[in-house]
Amino acid sequence: QLQLLESGPGLVKPSETLSLTCTVSGGSITSNRYFWGWIRQPPGRGLEWIGTISYTGRTFYNPSLKSRVTMSVDTSKNQFSLRLSSVTAADTSMFFCARLPESTTYFDLWGRGALVTVSS
Amino acid sequence: QSVLTQPPSASGTPGQRVTISCSGTSSNIGSNSVNWYQQLPGTAPKLLIYFINNRPSGVPDRFSGSRSGTSASLAISGLQSEDEADYYCAAWDDSLNGVVFGGGTKLTVL
Image (cartoon, rainbow over all chains, first blue to last red; front, side, top):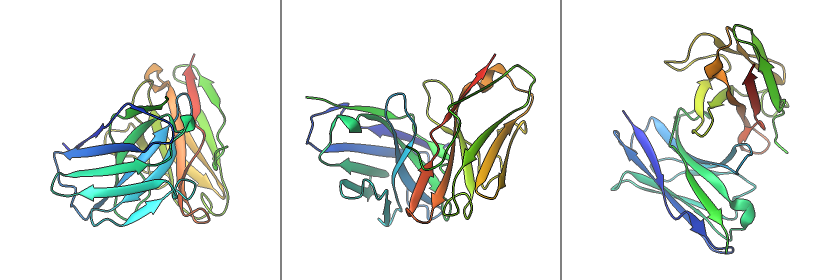
């Protein structure tokens, strides 16, 4: 059974770069049947799509975050990653990684999430 | 302000049928598939409905989706206490070139 697990620092200082990794277990990230994505949820609020990446590194970013977002894939570690630069308190969120079947826009499998707080 | 509009709350009694609406535009719901997610308290979202009215394996047939024009709806029949959760609609938006979500609807089972 394929599983996703987010990892990374739970606390980031304002103006610094947030970095998270999603480890895929029970299956290969290089399957061309799937893309991989990040979604965030500020405390007590709704979901926001951050971006999507293929195992070949093709990316799609939320236009509102595009200038600050970088996503990458490490096939040797079966992981994909998120970097969000110049963070502020408004970026404090639960971050979820998820899987998308190819040629679709829905997330059929989610990680449990990682809370990242931006504070000095 | 979310691109897709959902009522912030809904409620029903056990056994009742409830619907949750999701309003969009011609650039999202009007031209692309709608998907629904269920988020139980303290957990990650779970795919509930995809391609407007399809259920992933394991999702009870009490849950159904529909679309009319630029609006979509999620219907839950035979409401159960374990259905108490937040529900989100989502779709691709051709103008924004990205996935957009509704603000979420908190369903309370009375």
